[in-house]
Length: 572
Image 1 (tube, rainbow, N blue to C red):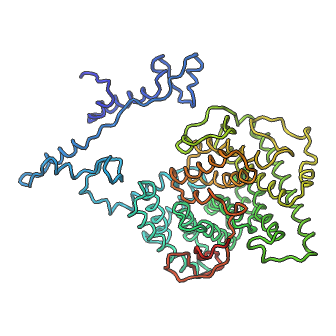
Image 2: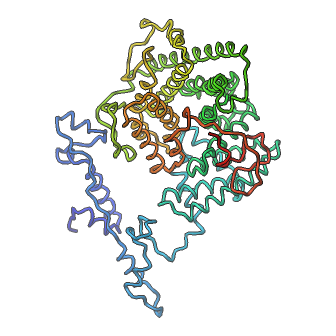
Image 3: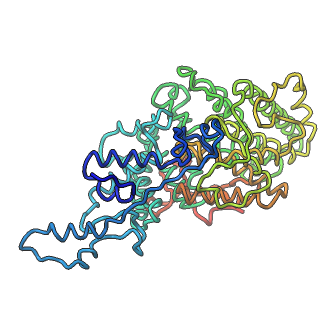
């Protein structure tokens, strides 16, 4: 059999196992040009091949030389030939009309499908499989994977949890496939159905903390991340999840599988409390210790960092009391109480920032030489077309996704606490914060990152966030992991850049990243963060309940924090 070196031609005839094996070998050899020519084995390192560097060879880069063949005419001809004898034979043009072409005006498919195949009975399975494969990753070893494996244990095809997962799966599949309106509308109908069923179950306190309800609330939270039906959808769902956790108590979350659920939702609840500027129960000592009593190994550096950042929402609430801002303005204080509140607020800020600095020093010692600085930006779909600000002349590379998540949250925390000090017009706090943190007590810098310094302002922290974003995008295995890690940090960085009147390209770059997360990953909520409200945070107002089924959030038990939100309810 004559050898054919055209990979495109090989793809036309892969009927035999030998042909398929030969095609795979040629395909592998086509990925990297230089080692093939120099008889070197590619080690797949990015941005350049280490073997090329070692042998002093200029790396030819990564390239795919194969091409895909449009087999539409062949499929049409086969359907014409295989028609049963005696049946009416369609013309060639009629046979081809039954094929959806990749470049058809509908634009709904990149693969050829036969029109007469009815996929409706398999729609739910297709959408759920796509959801698990791209968004939830249930087979991973992370808390997220264990969490969604919990949902597999439930029974009943039409249980509340299954309706919620179908709504999320159908909507996400439609969102990521040319915004298919029929699928998105079907997902919306399932979402409203799940909302009504959840309202009925929440009316009974004895069942309001069932595993099924907990997972349903989290699923609906993710639905709002994708569709963002209104400004406060995700905020309300996260608040409801927090209320249900608090009702069950911290001891319940020291046992599996609820321990993994707690680890997963903890950051979401803290972010929600910061967004609403209300203290969170997660700032109490029992919620920082008891859930880890049986699983101390899961108390990672990131969760230690969240212990500190959890205080931020309470600090914001007391600052709002002082300045008569937002919901806290109703919690009035007398002139005699104001000095006491200021002193208490000052002590909490100083303690929290000292804890952040200590955490950063400990992190530097535990993680030596894990961050490098380079002028070669990682390639990704989200930032490739964005104009780059001056601070991105170099970017940071980390050894693992968990390390970049740590640094993004640390910088967001330092930025927010530092900004709060400037609002209080009390620069003497910085002296107290850095007292005892002399150069002799600082660890030797082991990474390309900056260590805490009294001279740093909010723009310094924002720029370290900006220079870490691109590695975060390429390193996170989970789409939810990318969004969950980056959104709070980007939000804080945008506020800092706007307040300090930084380089215009810095704000546009951050806004472009959020737009890219919405477009490429399907999280429409990211667009809400491009233009933050005053002070950069939501200030929702108190609302009243409405009747179930009107398309808004309607729950019978208002104590669960699931309240309807309408545009006219939003304050200035």
